[in-house]
Length: 478
Image (tube, rainbow, N blue to C red; front, side):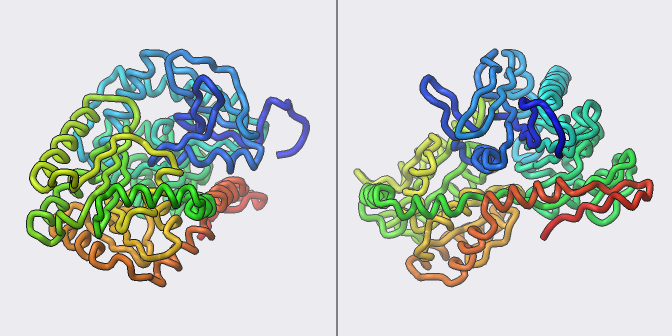
């Protein structure tokens, strides 16, 4: 990636549905959206001199570029119909339920599909105009699955990466997507596809061979004379930044204040989720209610802090989820709380990282039990913050990583979930060497190393099928 070029072109362009900043009437600031992997990438991309394409939010907003802490940001505009049909329609009501294991039934409409392709073309055109010759374009998540192939048609000189942070559905669910072949072709426009879990990587390879009749060997697919590598790249966190926050006197004082407001509870459980049925919130609430009702947890000495952050635009699907959770929280408090001592503190907002770290320090147990195979970033944040290694984590077995020292559970199994929560609550306060080792691993595999690992693999020369010895294979790093 050398030679003369326009200063307005970039060797690294990141493309995501949303920009990694929040823009308001004052100054832009780094976004801090729970479960949004791209929101934490901004500083790492800025450090590499990259540019970023994404929607800034709002309708028909300005598309003029601007800078934030060394990162050039290029907004992509969405119209009112785009927001309705692309974001709230195809992304939120068609793809999200399917990719989250059909916890709720997806809905498909031709109008939404057309809008999805139209918006993806707009993103691809913008990336093609911004990337330097021979540069890297890194596309993120299921909102933009058509972009890699659309971009390759215009700019075959580019190295294109695709990262899916949401759970990729198993093959038997993916084939229900009416645009399944088109979606796969879109993804395979990339040179490297990263997914959260090794099982998901195997699924992409299986689908490419079965649906598209492409040659699959080891960790790669051959398509149109190109080799596309598929690998597991579970999203990481900035562990060092979280540990610094956990040591900040004001954050620790905030944690002490939070704990004091829990009215002397001996055991404080915490769940930090997106307001989405795939997060397993309802299953955890049911398990908690059962534990209180059977006396396995003492309602006078136990409290649950449930954070359910709004997840994207309001849709009928999300309104139903919100209503169900509201009712369940009220019912549990009505049955088990006493005056001045609720058994559930329910926060329906998205606390910034500083406040989340204070919550992590105030809690004894974190419940991170998503129902499908994604990356539990809040679990990693919790472990990074708890440098005392005495807290406990109940973690869904469907998450991308195996973290030693935590309690792994199938959140679809009510009895197993009951036992896991009860066991974790009984073990608090005991220092764990396994948790210490896991926390150190989070530091060695932090956000910056995750970015570097993906970009290093993506920048490697491609393998061609014409036998040219100048080309070598990309290998998924371990």
